[in-house]
Image (cartoon, rainbow, N blue to C red; front, side, top):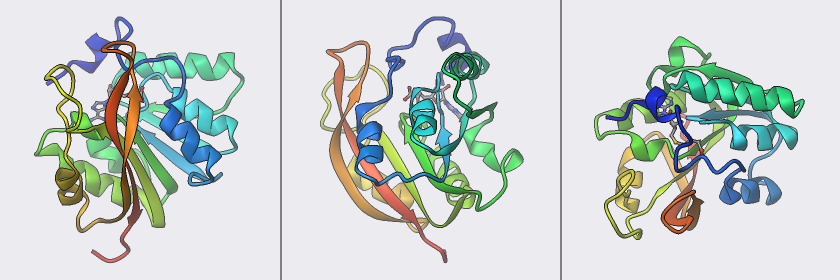
Length: 198
Ligand code: SAH
């Protein structure tokens, strides 16, 4: 659908050069605690670097080599340690061990997945989390008008995609910061806990 490497030849609309405020608040509120965190579809790494600065041990994965290159350069400039690797989120098992992470964050990856990719991806997230581990995901919501950008996601679609792999704790209204379309896009922020037995 998208050519992610091509997109990172310039600065994409979501690449706001600071961490998404919704994820900063998860750290400030103690929902994301120091521990091992995977940032799936990390882009140029702002969320991952913010987590590292707050005491998390972070791995960031992205399909786009250019995005991972920029993330690594930022980590070096800011003297922060994050393991940034080129990895397909549909094939995390080829790169990372099972039950390795306390938390997975996803800022705008789920919402670019096709219907066919969603269940594959959700299983990969489930596999990589420890028992009781948490998945925090932010996606464009169906409350956002217009057709541009990634498709909007409904609460029902989130529930369908995460069942039976996760227990949803909440789906909250949130805002996605972008460099275009007025800056703030209506989004859903999801907190979900890994179900042990599926
Ligand atoms: N989380 C970042 C980027 C969001 S855009 C941020 O908040 O700024 C979605 C990102 O997912 C892009 O960087 C894209 O390259 C990446 N991506 C898309 N499909 C992917 C896949 N299958 N595996 C890993 N990364 C993917």
